[in-house]
Every structure is written in C-alpha cells, then in structure tokens.
Length: 360
Ligand SMILES: [Mn+2]
Image 1 (cartoon, protein in one colour):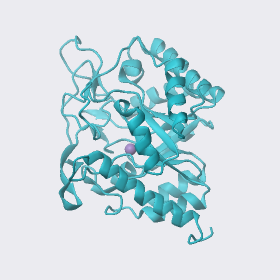
Image 2 (cartoon, helix red, strand yellow; image 1 turned 180 degrees about the horizontal axis):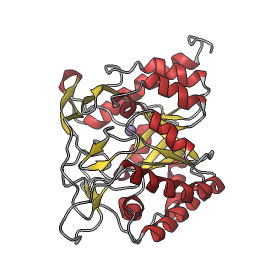
Image 3 (tube, helix red, strand yellow; image 1 turned 60 degrees about the vertical axis):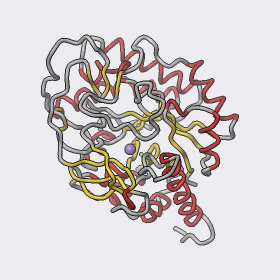
Image 4 (cartoon, protein in one colour; image 1 turned 30 degrees about the horizontal axis):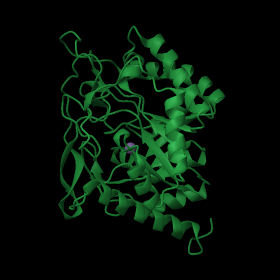
C-alpha cells in the first residue's frame, strides 16, 4: 500500500504543522532541516531565490546530532505520524564534496556520521540533491489556474555562481572574488561516484536508503555549471554506478515531466519495477524546461492517476508527498494549496486501493 506523506520545512517542525499534516490525512512526514529561508519565518512557500541564492548555509561545525534527530522523531510520533525521511544536506556540511574542495574528506566523514545517526534514530530514508547550482534560475508569477502564484522558468540563467556559494546558498561570505570554474559533466559524475562509494556502504549498514532528487530545473547546464540527472535515463546511470539497496531515488514527477527528453510514465514504470523509488514528489507541471510552470496537481501535463496505477502495479509501497503546490488566494496561501493537493491525493489513493480500484 502506498502511504500519504507530507513535507515540512524546518521552521514548520512544530505542533501546529504536525496537526495540520495529520488533518490532511498524512500518515508520514518528510522533513527539511536546512533553513532555506535565512531565518525569515514569514516565508511559507518553497524558496525561489534570486541570483544571490536562498540565503546563508548553516553552521559548518554543527552537524545534526542523534539527540536532535531522535527528539524530532519522538515529537512527530507523539502526533501519531511516522518520520519517513529527511530531505537534503546543508551546503555548510558538504560544499567541498560537491566542489571537490580541500575539506572534502572531513565533510564526508561528517556525512557518514550523520547517516549512522539517522539510521540509529530509526529514520528510513535520506533525500539529497547532488548539484552545484541546486534549485536555481526560476521565476515566480500567477502561473497556475485562476492566477494562483506558482514558480516556473522563463528561459535559462547562465550567470556564473560566485565563490562561496553552492547549491543556491552562501557557505562562505568571505570567499575571494570570482566565480566557480566551469567543469564538465564527466567531472561532476566522478564527484558523485566518490560520494556514492563513500556513503552507500555506511547507509546500508545503518539501514538508511539514500534517495537522489533529479535536477530542478532539469537542463544540461544552469549558471555555468553542469547538471547530473536532466533526462530520465540518467537515473539509471546513477543506480548502476554503485549497485546497493540503499541507492534509491527521490522521484520528483514534476522535475521528470519538465525534462525535454524521455517520458514520465516510462520512467515511473522503469524505476518502480526495479524497486528503486525511495519516495515520490507527487506534483504536476505544464511545459518543459526551460519554459514550464508548476501547476495544481490536477491541471498539469501529467495524468496523475495513470502514475499511481503504474506505481501500484509495480507494488510501490513507499510514501508520496505533494512537494510544491501553487499558493491559493486566501489568508493561508501555502496551507490551502497543500490541503487541496492532499485531498486530491487521498481521494486518488482511496479510489486506487479501495473497492473501486482495478485489480492489477
Ligand atoms: Mn521535487
């Protein structure tokens, strides 16, 4: 049985949002511990960010501890919810793994300790996005149905990334002038190979699945940096370069549908059949990168029920979360958008898994 999950940003890890998720029908949570919002607690929607990025990365010397993880999990469990996954490393903790910099080995050792602690705390999945530019180059506007505010892309951005910034966050405010040098796709894949070879044996032993997000937005280059998974077949390359039960995917339907090549249904079939989907970002989109718009779950290019049917046929029993939704015109734009997506997902799952669903 697939499970209905809900994603919460760091500043939402509180009683009110746990109740909200539960009220939306969620049984599982995916949480972010990176503070994308630069401590601006008014921001509720997904971070968009300009050329200066989302804000400052966290404290490089303060890796999330076992005690911190266990306390969050306990709080979530007390609300009758399961903690399924943590989504994303803080750039402060792995910038030199991404950049092949001098602190790479030290940071890799810290990431391994973090994954051991995630396993010890009983959190089964850790999502990550191996990317230099991260989620960059997008715009925001009244893109969705009824002029709901959403994010999209209106052409690519090739502005080079300043030194001291990676993954759309600033990790060193005192970095020397200049920009990141342009590297090849092969160089980026070899950095990923190092990361997978180091982290996956540790993750296996800890009982944690690492789950890779595809590029958002999926283009060969953004901000003068190569991208990794901007075509669905590149996910296969990632899986094959280090075979392991812990090598899985943070399967973002929106990002996959935005890819200029490939087919979102074929990709869903291929990776769910292999049992390689860690969890699903269940969102919809209109168009393809570099010209697309994030939409309500029921108005985009993807036939979401067809996706659910494929997942069910291949016995996917993991978690689906809405990822992002457009903001609705009311006093609580983010919450309304999320509640709308959750209602749709809950009904779709009931239909598929209940007496009205077709037997596979
Ligand atoms: Mn996503």
